[in-house]
Length: 356
Ligand code: SF4
Image (tube, rainbow, N blue to C red):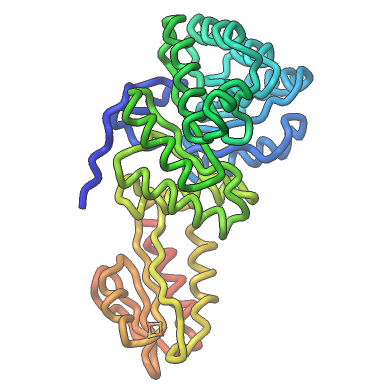
């Protein structure tokens, strides 16, 4: 099955193009505070290594601006940076003056139409992008009342009202997100927006939760939307490390053949037939490959039921037998090793393959 992506307008964030069939951009948000300069630099470095295309950073107050200014002057962000602004519209203006690539504003709490227009005007002057970021937890009260408390309709109306303000300012370089914590509401809102508008959509399930729960909720919600061709950029929001958000995003995109990066690990779930500590080998492979860019399929299988088939099908694989484990490279057995040396041998072959 090939997913046919819906055509959207192309927008520009720094040197990155989003929408119009460009690769689906992966975004994450820094967990550190702007004043924690050392932590910010470390987080940015790891995010970029793991394939993050766009980095968002919270700018909560006036004193944050000075820290952001220093980071931008030091060229800490090698990828486009998005300043996340809530409540104080003047922070959006300050960030655009600093030269950020994009500002995310939440129309529900920015303080009215004239403020939104001023932000759009400034973004147009600065050739920056904006993100209309409606969130189910902070919908404008009037809009919510008008829609009799219907979250989906309120979110759609909130987005469309903001789009109209931007278009009236002749500003078109923006993307849209409308995230709800309910997966079904999120799907519903994005489907309606995708039918009504041509601007690129940034997908996400807001406040999705800790990595296990949040990863699953995001995979279901984003997976359904992406499989219907909706979505130009994504973020998997997790209560956890930002690099895990990026990793989860690539697994979702890779599962749908929309964008591949790094190592795909095929490992069996283990059962009463498993004769070795398979998880230990899987953990070793995860550690060795977490920031590898090269596309590679690695299979780690616990017995001969499905083991040889899956291992043969991978770029590199190992299948446990009764006495020995067989190591496969590109479909051929290259070695049969005793159990006590199989992890070491497999690691050597994998490292060799990663170096090629
Ligand atoms: S491959 Fe073998 S060990 Fe692994 S789950 Fe299947 S039957 Fe069990």
